[in-house]
Every structure is written in structure tokens, then in C-alpha cells.
Image (cartoon, rainbow, N blue to C red; front, side, top):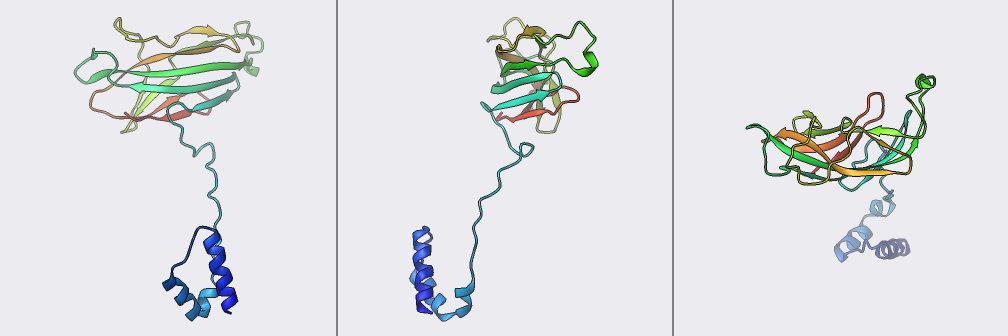
Length: 196
């Protein structure tokens, strides 16, 4: 019996779990304690739906219309010195999109405006989500004193090319942004956690 207790104590010590004398004494006094075992299993990896992405994390956007690698690099609020009104403040989301492949969807095979060699990128898919679940769409225009390079809006990108820049937003001055998203109707959305 003492050999079993000694073997368990050696295994625990080797595993970095060590024992103290009080624990050893109680194990020797109680036969039931010798029979108890604990199996440690690694935590399962989160599924893509559960995984939280943050600033600097790249995500794959794979859709019927093509494939791209997308990253949210930074979020700033206020962005620049102007405010748009008493209740709104300018914000900027720095993003990067690399176009990997363009596909012509089945429904557009006979439409000459769809080609496999280029895609149109814009601010439209980008949203900022506030702590009250309000979704704020990208601003419709950029103001003249915008302090940094703007992400292309309604411009062509070819496979193998990347675009990087700031998408403008007007967010509630008293609100807190909790995430940024890339949304195209009918496709799986991408989300990144923000620290506002």
C-alpha cells in the first residue's frame, strides 16, 4: 500500500504538482484517497465562430464572389480634431484587404460587368459596433482635414494586390466601440474586438 502512495507522490512531483506533508499524511490515512484519480485534458480549441479576433489579426473572407485576407489594424476616436455635431465625433478604422481570388457567381455568368480579373472595394462593408449594439456604417464622405491615408472607396483591386488605409466613421461621442465588422449581404460576417 505504501509503495502505491509513494509512486503517486513521485508522479505528482514529476508533473509539477508536488505534495506537502499534510496531504501525504491524509492520503496514507485514507484508503479512498488512493483510488481517486484526476484526468487533465487540454481545453478544446475554440471553433472559428467562437474565436475572438482583435486588432492585427488577419481573417479569411471566402465568399461566392471571391477570397480575400482582411485585417483590422487600428481604431482611433476621436480621429482628427473636428467633431461632426454635438453628439457625434469622427473615428477612423485602419484596415487592410488583400485580394486573393475573384470568382464570377453563378447568377452573374452571363453578365459582362462581372469578370474574374478584378473586384471593386469600398467602405460600404465596414461597420463599428457600439456597446449598446448600435451598428455604425462608414461615413459617406471624408472631411478635408482627414489626418491620414484613406482606404480606397469604390476602386478596383486585382488579385494579388492589397489596399490599406483608414475608413471614416461618425460615432456617438458618449458611446464606446466594442467591435468592428466586415459585412456583405448573404456572406458570413467577420468581426474584430476593439479597445476604445
